[in-house]
Length: 135
Image (cartoon, rainbow, N blue to C red; front, side):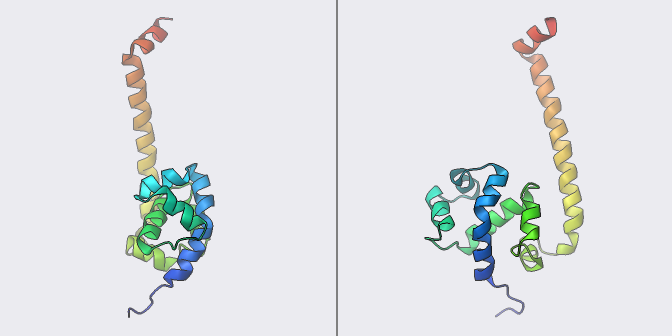
C-alpha cells in the first residue's frame, strides 16, 4: 500500500453531499452533468440518492469539472473534499496551483474578450447588423 493514501470512501461520501449544490451553482441539471462527465443521468440520480456508489473515476471527473470552474471552486476548497491530497491527485505538484489559477483567470478573461470581439464582427457582417447600422 502507498503511504499517505487518502480515504477515498470518506472523500466520496463528503462529495456526494455537495453535488446538488455544485450543480445548482453551475446552473446545470443532472442530465447536463452526466453529459459533461460521460455518465448517464440515471447514474447521477442514483448517486445523489445514495442508491448507487460513486466510483472513483466518476468522482474524479466530477471533482475536476467542479474544481476548474470558478463558480464552484471556492465551495470545494472550503469543504473537506478538496484537501491537499486530492489536489495532488488531480494536479500533481500543488505548489503550482496559485499560478495556475492566475493563468486560468487571465485566459478566461482573454477568451471572453475575444468572444465579444467575434460576436461584434459577426453582428456587423450579418444582414440584421447592417440594417441596425443604417437606422
